[in-house]
Length: 173
Image 1 (tube, one colour):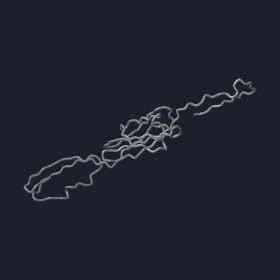
Image 2 (cartoon, rainbow, N blue to C red):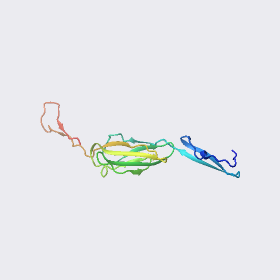
Image 3 (cartoon, rainbow, N blue to C red):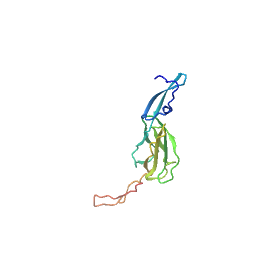
Image 4 (tube, one colour):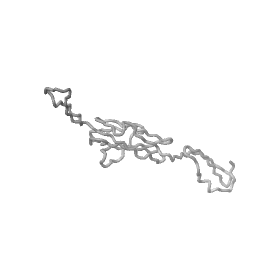
């Protein structure tokens, strides 16, 4: 549009009401002598939080060696940084460390998740986007067991039997 020399509109220095996603703007500035300057710029509005989920292994599943937890992260505009922490459930949570978004979390059961038992290893993850939105923390516990059960031993070994029943003892891990 044409410039009207000698007029100013202070309200036009603020633009409101633009939508989520990429927005394109053009601004024109006029001075009292009729000269003008035009600028075009892009503003990306992002009010939607990213999404993070731990997809495998299953929650509570038993692990007997080091393993990887698969993590899915997504954001419609600007996924930025992803975080993780792994520790013994029930212990104080350590600080967060960064990880590759959409990758996996390596879990070492000999140095990090050293407790054994049902849901003894806790894995947490979250992601942020470039606008500062956060997915919120996702938690998944895994069960750790590295001790093999004892071999079944017949309690009647070598004995004469008059029945078809044989008794065994075993100790699960």
